Length: 321
Image (cartoon, rainbow, N blue to C red; front, side, top):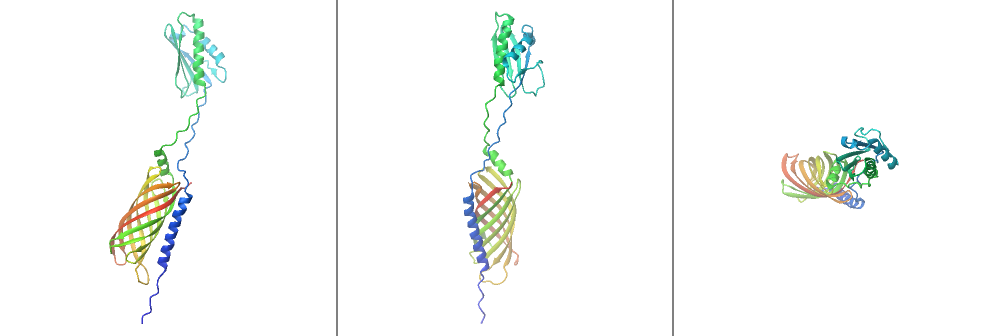
């Protein structure tokens, strides 16, 4: 009488352990997720106020207004850290208030003043009927008002918050390590059977490519049990800070334990493509849905079969500093 074959427990035990670990990982990810994916924008540096004044007169204005007297009057009134340069011209990159005085008509004096990164201030003085000594004083007073407007501290600018496109671009460039668990299923055309189980995956994301390593335990409707390891590469694209897609290819090797069979597992090899969509749940926790079409080969019998897989995963994707 043939003794009964001892019941094998190691594949089922391992699959149960993997499923429990995947569920535990998913629960932990929701707990540890923290809502912080938009870094604050860098502070905007304030432009230092100018400390020098350069005054220039047009040829027509210089014929009637004393340039030296205008400089002296301005220098006496502005005070503070501002000083009037003796020359009307200087380097273009210096932080100065530039003043230009013109006589567009015999009775109107026009004063223009401007400092770096500031709007031009324009003052007009009606000098009709005034002696030129008095007109010079009025022109100097108008110039002083324009200079003070240019030299006063600018209001502190608030930094512009980054746009959604800028946040997504920064996330795509930042290396990160992702780990998570998934509920996965597949259809195999060899015998029309379905498979269902769990998967653990670890992924290292870089700017261009992402490499992943996965471990799966699946049970088949035919009674067989699959233990599989997989590797692959892909590319992720952030369309929004909380939405991304992933495309890639990979290869897997599995040991298949047929129902009621004893001894070693049958080796299977599988090549696949993957397409996935991920949505941020909270903080660094992501919910992803993937589709994996491919080709599986029974290495022992050299029998190929079509494979169509799908999975839903929750994972933690943290930046690598």
